[in-house]
Length: 273
Image (cartoon, rainbow, N blue to C red; front, side, top):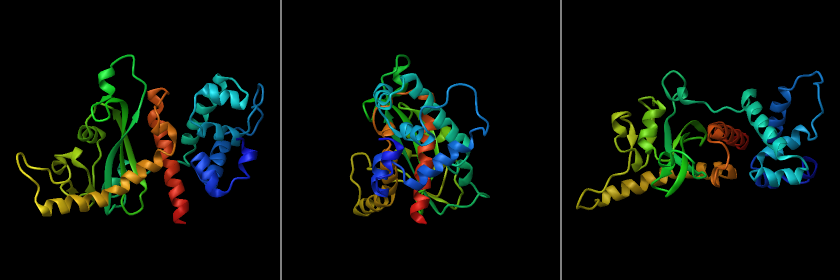
């Protein structure tokens, strides 16, 4: 479906088809057009318009299938996708706040929620053990996601290999919370209290024992508060590049995840307005 045909879709249908709202798509077009020089460049002009290049980049299929649909070569598809992603990030219109916003002096968050999500990848040719996730039982890339509990906006991300433990990923990320900010984590962050006293973790079942009824109630209440980050992960994985097996080069995984997170935040701001 090209840009002209997509204009017949309603707002909800456009969101379901491409993963972003029409207003967010227009902002992407403006961000991509702003970086273009006003003078005519040498060489053959683009066969596809800016709008069609963005729609093309939002698809997640093999370059062969996309190329046959748009009647261009696979190498052209690869160049278009890379340029669209790079120029949108360079435009500055799609950015997430970053980990500096979590410390005192940059605005205090009352409560944040932290979790790690995984994306399956092709089995690497080298250093396979570094990417093998014992939890998922296949090779993955991990992303640590921190969100604001009040607005469900993504604050910062950090990336690691599938073998890296969630708590080790947190220590490597260099994230520091404001002492007054409450943080909610799952059982993968045992020992978090040494780094942030104002954290809330599930009660662990004692060895050769059972949890008390009050501990069970606490774990259920904590789980109901933390479930919002699972909803955020689900909304991010509307973009199939994060949900299905990641077939691209791993070095651009962080750039793509950051761009998708920024698009998600922008869509959230439109809903709030």
